[in-house]
Structure formats: structure tokens, C-alpha cells
Image (tube, rainbow, N blue to C red):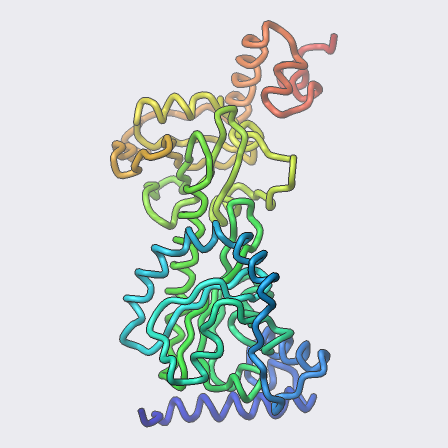
Length: 374
């Protein structure tokens, strides 16, 4: 397909930026490329790479690949249905999908790969190392480094051997909040399609949600801000065990609740996040009631829908609009005090036991209830 004048201008600007940055004559802002691209180029140079050097596209050893496949099984299983739909969406634009682990090793490939084209065949194989160290600047290495969706076109790749590719990439996070891999959409000498960055991010989000919901849990909380009814892939998702401990969350929920990635043996409890009784969440799921507003310890409120495993968000009744509920919410401090008082009553006055159930200190219990310490 002949290049339009806009496309030629774009490639010329990239070539000029490469010349300036790789020769050390200008920084990224002067050269007209994104800072993260020039930073990746500089890392490649520091590794001893040169743009004209041939790229081997080497596969890892069979023994290493067995370990990678075992560790990546939950990611690959969660991605399968998403990648099948994604392959249909991109079939007519000569792009294909690559899934890697967090080290840039290919663990799955979907879509119309032209195996007669060596440029496609060498990267679209399970076990190929597509990390920055191995193949330089790519959407794969950039997404894994920047931990955000990226678009990379032709000469923005470091090596000349990879300058035929146009790629959109997005990181994929596991239920523990850690980056587990990335999803890449690649075309070869095709029209530039930066809108694919949005598609790849949406697809990565679907993989994250599918993975989270496939893990063992007793309750799912679908979270959204008031005025936004929970029920689609844009929701924050939080999973709890039967005792109210948080066992997983998608990135949206972690941003809403300011949750850090999970540390081994340090699971948070729902009572660490919500300033209301965590048992009521299970009750709401059993009633299959509407979404409800719940206060957070931060003072914010979230629209929350509680679901048992297998329950559908669409099957529950919609929440009444805030203006139609005509309920004056209690001040947050009163909600907190009521919850603490209830926990102390359930513990038969045992403040230490109540504090453990709530996940707070005994000093906080005494302070909130305004009672002297025993």
C-alpha cells in the first residue's frame, strides 16, 4: 500500500529523531519522540547494542520453557477466550496478538500470522525472548518497563531488523497486583493504527478480570463511583474469602482503594478498607439486592455490588439514584463508631478480640468509643 504524505512525514520525523538521539545530539523533547522511547534507546546503547546489528530472535531452552509455561498457565488460560475474540477483531488489518510473561518470553500467539514472512514467523513463536535485552526497544519491552499501554511505530524500535513492525502493547496484572506479562498487537509494514493502544488495553483489562474471577473466592465486589452503575469491564473488582480477607483485586480496584500489590502472608481484610460491617456484604449478596453505597475509611464512598461466585451483575436490581433514595447518610465518624461498637458487642466486651476482627489497634477502639483503657 502506497504511503500517504502524512505517513511519510511521520517516518521522516522518526528517522530524524533516531539520528539525533542515538548520536547524543538532542534529548527526547527536542527530537520529537516520547521520553520513554529515547530512554529505552539509551538503555539499549548501554547494553552494547547497535541499531545495525542483526537480531537473533533466540528461543529459550526447553527446560526454561517448561518452567515458564508452568508459571504462566493461569495467565494463558485467562487470556484464551479474550485472544480468540481479539483475533477476530484484528483479522482484516494484518495484525496479530502476542502474549508474553513478565520477562518478555512469548507464551501464546493468536491471529493471522503469515508464516511465509520471516519477520512475522521469528517473533510469533512460543518461547522466543522478546525482552529489551534480547531485541531492543519494542512495545513488549516498553509496556513491561513503563507498566502502561504504549504505541510504537516502525523506526521507533531500536534495531533496524525490527523497524518493519508497528505495535501496541499493554501490561497484564495478576490478582495479586503484580505485572504478570503483557499483550502485544503487531503488524508488519502496515498502516499506523495508534487506536490499537485502546483496544489492547481493553483486552488486557478483560484478561485481568477473567483471571481474577477464575481464582478461588467466596465473594466478588464490583466497585464504581456513585452515579456509575457497576456491571461491566470498567468496574473495580475485589474478591474476598469466607472470612472477609481480600484475596485479589484488579488494577481498577487497587487504584480506587489505594491498595498496593499483595505481599505473601499479609492479606488485608475488608474491614481495613470499608468503614462498615464486612458481614453485611455477604448478606447483600445472599439477598441479590441492588448496588449500595459504602463508606471507605478514607472518607470517600463507592457504589458497590456484592456477588457470590457465579452470580451475574446483570441479574441484580439496579441501585436507586442517589437523589431518589432520600436517605441522609450518617457522617463517616458515626458509621465507624457504630461498626466498632457492634464488633465489641459481638466480642462480649473483649476489646482485643474486637480489634483483631476489625483489623485495627486496641488504642483505636478505645479512642473511637471514648472509653478509658482497662
